[in-house]
Amino acid sequence: MTRLLQVSDAHFGTERPQVVEALVSLSSRLAPHLLVLSGDLTQRARRSQFAAAAAFVRRLAIPGLLAIPGNHDLPLFDLVTRAVAPYARYLQAFGPELEPRFSASDCLVLGVKTTRRYRHTDGEISLEQRESIADALRAARPEQARIIVLHQPIAVPRLSEVQNVVHGAEAAIVAWHDAGADIILGGHIHLPFVLPLHELRSLPRPLWAVNAGTAVSSRIRHDAGNSVNVLDVVARRRVELQQWTYREAAGEFVLGATLQLG
Image (cartoon, rainbow, N blue to C red; front, side):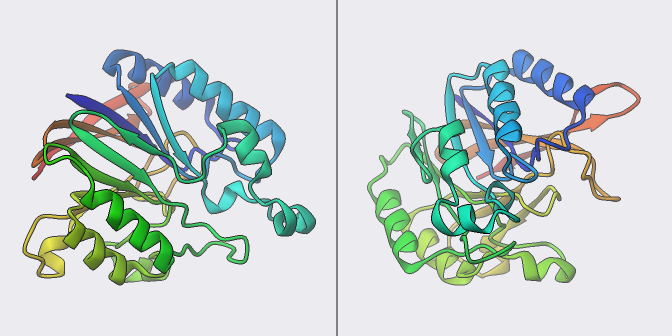
């Protein structure tokens, strides 16, 4: 069994120290095999913020890492750097891959860079990315659960959030479903949720959209606090999702909903 810890929208530069400590403690208890960082590691893509994010990752001491950048990981006010080398600081902190991949005996996890230097907050899935991910999904071994990681969500549960859906979502859902995808992870809007895309789109096979809230930032919503997702891959069609939420009174992350995705 492979255990994934999804940490999204940490926004270092706005982190809450007590929540950071609680998440380090949770990770130590759960001992995940792969850390999935689904974007917005920093608040303003400053070197000091990337350094703090990288130090946090080292403290978690999780054997595997799959990280993709979010829109906040591109410089906003440094227009020259944004135009010429928008991911330079991110790459210095988290290595040479903007679309990393992870393969284990029971799962295949594929990162997709949805950010664009010419978009401020919106994300995009290009035709090339859609086809590349579909090819990788088709090449997966039969026993592998197939998980895709985006920053901007592939779907949202509220009409008020529709503007945050990644551009190219509908075509990607169909193509990736047909190629064998099982779960699409996202973040960006600081709202944890699970959507059965197969029911909403009348697809013949299960495909789930799973979103994470903000892990450690003070930029929490009025209806959602700090949270992370844990996914246990038991079998190809059996992935257990745990939603862990930080509780102020307890000073720790507490297990909330547990769902079977399959």
